[in-house]
Amino acid sequence: MKVLWFANTSSNFAAGDNPYNGGGWVSSLETEISPHVELAVAFLTRQALDPRQGVVHSSPGSRVAWSRVKRHGVAYYPIYNGHDRSRADRMKTLFRGEARQEFDLVANYISVVEDFAPDIIQVFGSEHSFGLVSEHTDVPVVLHVQGIMNPYFKAFLPPGVSWGDYIFDSLKPGCFLHRLFIHERWKEACRREQRILRAIGNYLGRTAWDHEQVRQFNPSARFFEGGEIMRQPFYDADIEAISDIPTQLTLVTTISEPTYKGYDLVLRTGKLLKEKYGLPFTWQVFGNVDPGFFERVTGIRTEQAGITLAGVASAQQLVEAIAAASLYVHPSYIDNSPNGVCEAQLLGAAVVATRVGGVPSLIEDGVTGFLVRPGNPEEMAERIVAMYRNKELLRRVGANARRVALVRHDRRRIADDLLGVYRELTGLQKDPA
Image (cartoon, rainbow, N blue to C red; front, top):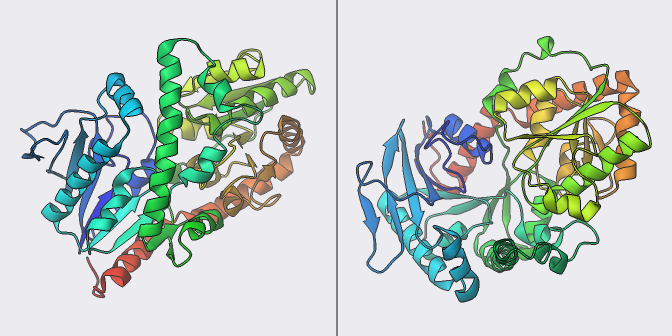
C-alpha cells in the first residue's frame, strides 16, 4: 500500500537537525508505520532545494518547487515555497494577498500526488493549504486533526487584550508589521480551513472536542479514532528510578510562542505563589517564549514571578526536568490534545491544566489530573498549593495518569488502528506489510 503524508513538519527527513520539538509525534508515527507501507512524506521548507539530493521539479513561472529524496526507506518531498523566504516576502503577501502563493502550492501538491501515485493521502492538520489537494484528486484523503484554526483564532489573545493592543504593542515598524501579518494570515487561514473541512469527508481525531468542531463545518464527516505516539524518551524513562516528590515546590511547563499558550497566566500565577502563599518554588518554562508582550500586558516581569525561561529542550532534557518536578502545569487558553500534557502523564506526573478544548478528554478532574478555569490565576495557584501539600494525592493522581496514558499512547495499537483506517478507506483488505 502506498501512503502519502502532507505534514507541517519534515518528520524524520532531517532527524536530529532541529532542536525544536514541534511535530515530534509525526516523526514517532513515521517510525512505527513506515515498515508496514510504502510511505512518502511531503512538507514545506524555506531552504532552497539541492539538485544533488534529487531531481528538482519546478513548473514554469511558479515560485514553488519540489524534489524527491529517498532516505531509510521513505520517500521525502521537500516543497520549497519561494513565496515565503523572508520578511520582505511576507510583507508582499500581507498587501497582495495569498491567491498566487496558494495557486502555486496546490499545483505542486497535485504534482507530488501524480509523481508518487498513492493509494491514500493523509493530511496532518487543517492549518495549512495541504488539505486543498482533496479538491483535485480521486485518491481517498483523510485529515488528521491537530488543532482547529477557527476556535483558536477566537482565543488567540489573553482576556481583556484586543487585537489593537497586540498589534500596536510596539511602535517598531518590524514588530507592528509582523503582528499585523499574523492577524491577516490567521484570518485567511481560518477561511481556507472552513473550505478544507467542508471538502474532506474523512477525519482522524483524538478528543471529543475536535470531533465536535469538525462536525460544525461538515456534519456528514466520517470520524476514526486516531491516537498520537509520543517521543521515544518518554516511553524509555525508568519510572522506578525517578526521584520522589521534591521537598521544595517544583513546577514545569512546556509552551510555545503563540499568545493563546498562556504565558501571562504563568506570570500571574507565579506572582500569587510568591506574594500570597509565600512558598519557595522553582518554575521552569521550556520553549520558544518571548516574554516581552506578556510582561507588558500583566505588569509582571519574569524574574519577579519566580519564573525561569529554560529555552527549547530536547526530549531527554524534558524527561529529566518533569521527573524531578512536583507538578506539570499547562496554562493554555485553547488546545486540542497538547503533547506536553500527554508526555507528562506518561511519566506519571500530576498535571494541573486549564479546562479548554480537548484537554478534558485527557484529564479526568481529580482522578488523572486537575482542571482549572482558563485565565484564572487565583484558582490555578490555589490548586497547585493544595496538591503540593497533599503528597499522597500527587502520587495517586500521577500513577492514574500514567496508567491511562500508556494505553492512550500505545505505539502498536495506534499503528494498527491507522493501518486499519487505510485498509477501510482504500478497500485494500490484505495486510499491507
